[in-house]
Structures are given as structure tokens and as C-alpha cells.
Image 1: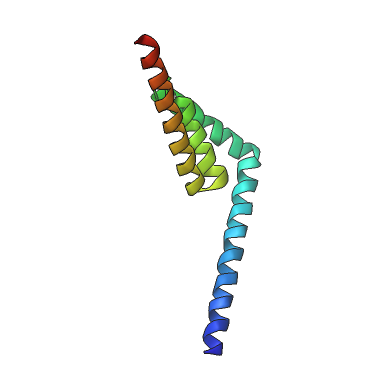
Image 2: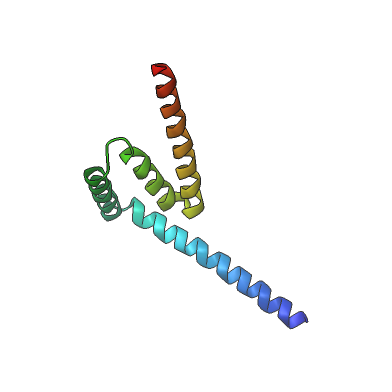
Length: 96
């Protein structure tokens, strides 16, 4: 039983260290000139193919996923959809 706990603890430590290394490498790449050029190119591509109404929200979601991870991107997407819904409702009520 003692050996099992040691193995599990070692695996947990290795996994947490791996995620830190991956995050640091990702952050370093995104802050590099090449990372900024690629990010700018993706933004231009998104602006070219998306309707004007949602392009900024999609870019915000993409940025959130890249910098803070997938779960933060999902939260940003939900927040953006809620805000857009409120805006649509305000627009409808003004016309009534």
C-alpha cells in the first residue's frame, strides 16, 4: 500500500510539473514575435470570414482559450452569448 501511494504521488507531481512546463512554453511562444504574427493572422482570418456582429466576440473567446485554457474560453463564450442576448432584448424592447 505504501508503494502505491508513492507511485500515485510521483505521478501527480509529474503531471502537475508537465502542465506547468507546457504552460510556460505556450506563454513564451505566444509572447514571441512569431506567436504575435500568427495570432494577428488568425484574427485577420476570423474578421474576414465572420459577420461583423460576432467577430470581436469570437476573437475574445479564442484569446481566452489560448491564454487561460479551454474552460476559461467556455466561460467567456457563455458570458458573450448572455451579453449578446441582453443586447438583442434591449433592442427589441426599444422598438416596442
